[in-house]
Length: 337
Ligand SMILES: CC(C)(COP(=O)(O)OP(=O)(O)OC[C@H]1O[C@@H](n2cnc3c(N)ncnc32)[C@H](O)[C@@H]1OP(=O)(O)O)[C@@H](O)C(=O)NCCC(=O)NCCS
Image (cartoon, rainbow, N blue to C red; front, top):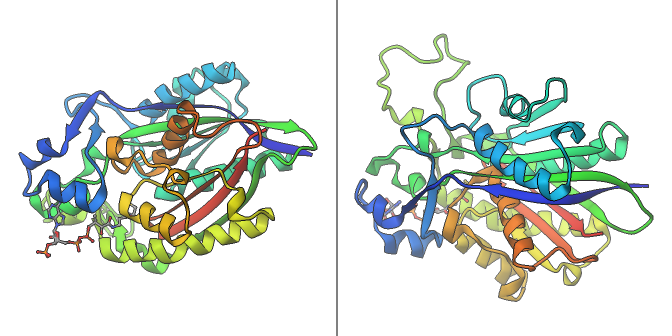
């Protein structure tokens, strides 16, 4: 039977490092507050003078992943692009990335599942491979948050968290009897809590999606978040969905070599590790350097975990998990071939 095997990874962040001290200069915040509450020390933002979209960052990450897989762009038979910050309203960033790769007919699918975009993307790639619809898939998570953040004290709870970046993964269907590849996925959503984390405007549900008389710096043009609610939800739902994915894969938590959670807040991930009674080194963190890069955060963390030899040897088992806007949450278990 075909198994969905990760052949390679790549990641890319734009060149501008924004430290917490840089943010202190524009909003009422402090390095101490940000580090204590989130673990974040710095993040990367695109050059505010240029034009860089999620597909541009995704393109750079994809080139690295393609080279590492020894694939050319022509080898790809399906592109999945996860983002909440598409380059433009439409068409999707997957189409824009496809063109940048020099392709003109390869199918491209955008996934708008925010912080769980990569999990939804991985589960989709696995389903496409197992159903025979595709065999060599480029899965990308890419975000440009910085051009949409409220860089005033009003938006400080969110603005200090988000960073720009992209991660890419080449996934191939491989015929093998080994227990390997994507072992299970558990995905969920609760749209009743959409307002807990959202950007409301522009909105196609309004007679005028850019409403008249609303100033362009109105708070509704920026992301708003009920941080404490999301925090509590994450700690309630992630252990449940992790167990669900373990049951589906018929394996125990002891058999997981590394958990790569979405990087939203180091306190969430540390509390998750404590709740699951895991050693500290079993949960991967890189939020300190990148902040929350939403759909890019898990593939970027996977890339770094593999570079650091924390995971990736034959037989290693990694569990990806996360919760974010939607709300959406999920867990995917992967075993290296
Ligand atoms: C956002 C988050 C870091 C805020 O931390 P928190 O401990 O919950 O803080 P609160 O929102 O309760 O705010 C506490 C105080 O800090 C203030 N504050 C918020 N942001 C601040 C900042 N950047 N700098 C300084 N103070 C800040 C608040 O105004 C509040 O002040 P008050 O007590 O005078 O009203 C935290 O709630 C969080 O990480 N939530 C989950 C985020 C998440 O997972 N999102 C999903 C994926 S995107």
